[in-house]
Each structure stands twice: as C-alpha cells, then as structure tokens.
Image 1 (cartoon, rainbow, N blue to C red):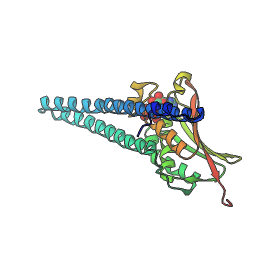
Image 2 (cartoon, helix red, strand yellow; image 1 turned 120 degrees about the horizontal axis):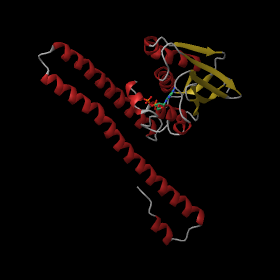
Image 3 (spheres, rainbow, N blue to C red; image 1 turned 180 degrees about the vertical axis):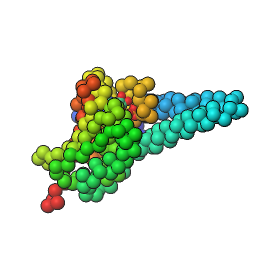
Length: 260
Ligand code: ADP
C-alpha cells in the first residue's frame, strides 16, 4: 500500500528517513501515472487497427458482388489483423518486462548464436528488400541471461534496420568485446534519425515518422522492449545516427567468463 507523508511528519524521525519515504511516494505516484498513461496509449493504439478492420468489413459488405474488390479488402484485413496481433504480443511482452518481478532465465548465452538467430528471423523481410545481412563476429563471448529475450532484442534492432533502409542496402551486426563489456552493434545505411528524435525513440509508442512507421507495420514498442531487455540484464542500449547516413544501435552487456 502507499505510505502517507502525514504520518511521517507526526513522528520525530531523522531527515534522511523522511526524505526516503517522501521520495518513495513520489516514485510510486510517478509509476501510477506512467501505468495510466500506458493504458490510455494502448487503447488508442488498438483503436487504429480495429477501426481499419471495421471500415474494411463495411466496404466488403457493400461491394460483395465484386469478387476482385472483396479479395483486395480481405488481404488488407489480414494485414491489419497481423498488426493487431503483433501489437498485443508486444504489449504483453513489455508488461512482463516491467512487471518488477524478474522473468529472466540465467543461462550462459553464446552471443554469436543470438545474432544468427535474430538474422534467421529477419531473413524473409530482408530478402524481400534485397537487403544483405552481414554478421561481423570477430569474437565469441558469452553473457549470462535470457537467450530468448536477447534474441528478441537483437531481432527488433535488425527488423528496424531493414524497415528503415532502402532496398539493396546492407545491415551489419557486429560483436566486439572491451574489458568485460560485450557490445552487439546493429548498423544500417538507412534514413537515420534526427537528434531530437534520438532522445525519444526508446519511449513506448514513440515514432519519429508515424506515417512511415505505420507503413512498415511498426508499433512504436520495439525499441522500448530492447531497452527493457537491456536493463533487465544490467546492460544498456545506445544509438548513434545521422539523417540520410544511417544508424547504429549498440546493446552492451556484461561479459561472462567461464572461469568465474
Ligand atoms: P517501430 O515499431 O515504429 O519501428 P520502434 O520502437 O522499434 O518502433 O522504433 C521507434 C522509432 O524509431 C521508429 O518509428 C523510427 O522512427 C525510429 N527508428 C528505429 N530504428 C530505426 C532505424 N534503424 N533507422 C531509422 N529510424 C529508426
């Protein structure tokens, strides 16, 4: 339950504790506000594909004598349904990651294997745009963590790199080590990101260019998931980007040494 500040003031306690409790309460209130805001955003984001679906269904109703049109709208409906599924899966994923209680497995994970699996997942989308996926694996470090979550994080970065690149471009994932930090960098030659957007893209539902992101089937949750996976592993994710030059997203994790 929440701690009331009034109670604290009635009892003589040293400043430090008062501060700690006050701080705790502020944090709690901020967390509640964030949850409320998330719920509002979720309903808003769900409304878009559902609205599109009912509009498409209506159109089919009135054009049911034209089989070509019916087919065309059915294809569109399937795409919206896919978007909706992805959105719901990501919402569940993000709620779990933020749930407080850790959902992490703590296995010894081969980072190169994570990159390979992320590439496998992104291969179809890359092929469709003739984008080559290049793995630059000079080292074979391990980290301690949840393999599935790490694959999902890297996959999100690779999917974005493919989505926001022109056909025929190249996407590179490299694994490097410095001291006890492993860095997985996903580099693209895509559209890049403005400086002011770079600060906000890790926020849930934030999209630098909503129209374009919607075209790519984007939900605005991918990078937020990557951030939470990184934090759950005691790591971080950073971005370097320049508009019309490209972007590099780097996931940094603590290296796991076998001798430990
Ligand atoms: P989305 O599902 O819209 O891609 P993300 O959370 O993955 O959502 O990314 C948030 C926004 O960051 C995107 O809408 C896009 O504007 C920008 N972005 C992410 N990755 C890249 C990239 N590799 N190149 C250019 N822009 C990117």
